[in-house]
Amino acid sequence: MAGSNPNSSDLERFRSEAIDFLEAHAEPKAHAQAFVWGKGPDDPSLFEEVDREKELQELAEAKKWRATKFDAGFGWITGPTEWGGRGLSRRHERLFAELELRYEVPSQGFFGIGLGMVAPTIADHANPEVAADILPRMYRGDIVGCQLFSEPGAGSDLASLQMKAERDGEEWVVTGQKVWTSGAHYSEIGEVICRTDPDLPKHKGLTGFVVDMKAPGVEIRPLRQMTGGANFNEVFFNEVRVPDAWRLGQVNDGWRVALTTLMNERASIGGGPGYGGGFTRLKEMIRHFGLADDAIVRQQLMDLYIRGSVLRYNNHRAVAAMKRGELPGPEMSGAKLLLTENMRRTSAFVSHVLGPKLIADTGEWGTYSWSGYVLGMPGMAIAGGSDQVLRNILGERVLGLPKEPGIDTTSPFKDLKVGTQNRD
Image (cartoon, rainbow, N blue to C red; front, side, top):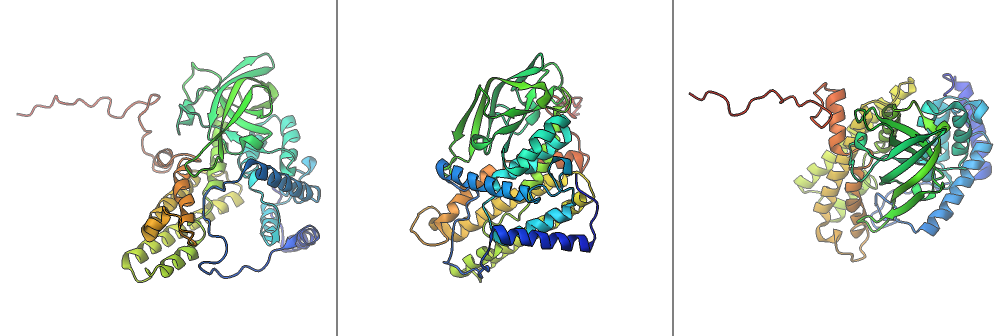
């Protein structure tokens, strides 16, 4: 959807136009202050715990800002002009994003899953008429999208899902349950993968759909986490009717649809170093608690920095590939795996440095607040594919190793005879 490679004068004109728009509609951010231990917010939690009423207010503000951007030509910069986009390049899109960071605007996190994962899948696999209807409304913020893949009985093995869709004329009747669905409670549409042929091998009997999250038969329940909040949901579908026009891709070709979404998901999730509040914060933490000369602590901190740098360089490589028009590949699985490993090591690091301060709330700045990070980390190790699944992907697709034995594979040890050797 992106336009051709722009020259410097094109970018400069666009930059000037973007600054004029931002100056007219938003306030510039105050200059960032150098980090000082004990000043400013101290919560590095991975999941923001907000009450639903406040969340809906913030969503309304976010939608208003997206609509303002879209109507001015900055909401879908790389989108087709016939669908309300600008038809410009990804360089234009990145330039606007960099400029927007300098201004106080409502959080756009509500749209991360819909625009980062669901919309690209709709663009690649949906009926053209449906895509032309849904995508402009998603990019304008009129509707929010969520992703419905995980199921209670399937774990990280997406192909083992059991939620079924049965054809009834020009509609499909969808029945089953999904779980760990972020944003389901405020989304208007969702991308769902269902089993449409139980007699085919598990990867081949799946089909993707766009579903109306407000349709009769859709029930959404919040899931309480050990952090105390409820960022995720379980969603029940009781004979929900979905038009065949809202199908994604061909019948029983849903695995291809799912892979499109998953690669974009891992590209989105694996974007940061995983430090939780920045490396400077960790460095100042050990100084504050008198551990700056502790050789073991210094080694742990340096290990975090090196791993974060490796992740950053890996992401640069992935971005360069996408600039060339290539789809996200297995390197995104590596990025997600590196991210959660960094988070795991960061959790261990702060636990070692803070000790009892992590579990006893004394009100001291920068101590107990880290419990939100430590308790949220296990959820991040599952989101976007568990570590085991990601290692299997890298082993099979990058290293060329045999597929892990399972119910749908042949064990490489099936011909091995145990206990029959002649021991004489």
